[in-house]
Length: 582
Ligand SMILES: Cc1cc2nc3c(=O)[nH]c(=O)nc-3n(C[C@H](O)[C@H](O)[C@H](O)COP(=O)(O)OP(=O)(O)OC[C@H]3O[C@@H](n4cnc5c(N)ncnc54)[C@H](O)[C@@H]3O)c2cc1C
Image (cartoon, rainbow, N blue to C red; front, side):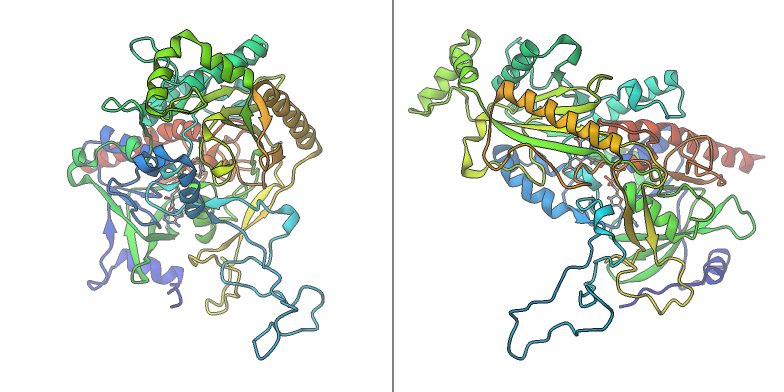
């Protein structure tokens, strides 16, 4: 069924004079996207504005009993982390896929085959639904993906929340003293801890593997590398310390029941486009939604509009609203991290150390009594290692030495998972204007003439990447790879199949810059409060707001930025209610 596009004229008339048959949805604040950043906005606004109502919209469905919960909180995945790889794979929808070569030379008999045309090489490739004929393969972020579900990517993320090094946050327009306070609050909302694998209240080591990996790195790397536990949005369960509770978008919001009916979530609802006010150029008049369950268009209005649809989804909504010309920096200055990855099997020396460590004898004895003949001195439920070597000036990359599920790196039957350690090193990308994502299809005048490939499978304008790594990036990546190999060498030998390698561009899922905050509208999309330049009631949120080139994981910083944005939304709402009482 085709999407029903309305002209801007029609949308305006509908908003100013809604027909009784199609009433407007209304709330004080509309938030597009239910990921952790949307939730940080929702919580702050609902808590600081005791009367405000919030309508949150998400294109995805609610896939768990508690809206936005981390799927890894199921015991099933905590018992078998390899299984979670499939959850992540199922959660990731690629952003830009060049058309495949569909010519099958061995297809014989009376089967349909793509017609041969005179348009030159490659012209027989089929444009499948969802593939992008404009994507230049060499400039693609092949593995870049979106997660469309209530809770967004926080339903599967790794929860690493390091605080950026000063060099990773030098372009951020929020003053440092203010940032420090906002970071503190972001830590609370995300429930970040860096001690949940170290020692329990009784002073005993919680995880043998974590402590032995950390000790090996501390003993062998210079103090300036600052080896430490990875700060994680996680808390060990009090009722059963073998398991943990990972932070999801639900953690950030807290129990929505405490807001009474002031918080509403509409699922499987696409935010199609914002409708700028015709008379007041600095204001948004409403937003066009589509209920995906019945393909019906709905119009909604609010005092403030906040778009937190991820680093691709957010500029996509703005581009579809025809705002590209008013916001020239939209989609530009894109940065994504490179990933160097390998897995090692721990050295004999380390296993011997575990075997002989007096502190762990009792645990090992109990384990061996239950599981006679196990050659490894590591209980089956021993938590995984979670160690970090942070970004430094001399080693400008972020290193995770840990064990976790990604869309790759499952151990399977190749080795005993207890002796495997993952190394993931994240490299930054130089900030360059020409690195960008752009959206095609949104300016077509004739609404009936969309060509295949100009919209994505959700009917939004197709995202196309133009991203390359500079010579400086390449040199940095090579140094990072060497550093990873040297670090791996301290811990063990490579697991066959997981030898040192760079992963596909985009796999870090840490795209930044596409809606960056700053002071100059020429090279930024929004101000320090994330309010879009030139608008008084429109905000953007998410990793796209980060204006820096970073090695570390972005979510903590995006929540920090959102907290300042939410304070500005409150100011606008307060202004409204004052005006009302006059
Ligand atoms: C495997 C994996 C590991 C990760 N590990 C880490 C980590 O260790 N540390 C870290 O900091 N980050 C990590 N991340 C990234 C992290 O999850 C994201 O940075 C974070 O979720 C971003 O939050 P957000 O709210 O901005 O966006 P998202 O979580 O992406 O949420 C955006 C929401 O917008 C919705 N949406 C999109 N378009 C529309 C539309 N048109 N209309 C309505 N709704 C829409 C989507 O359905 C989604 O729910 C990881 C991600 C993955 C997948």
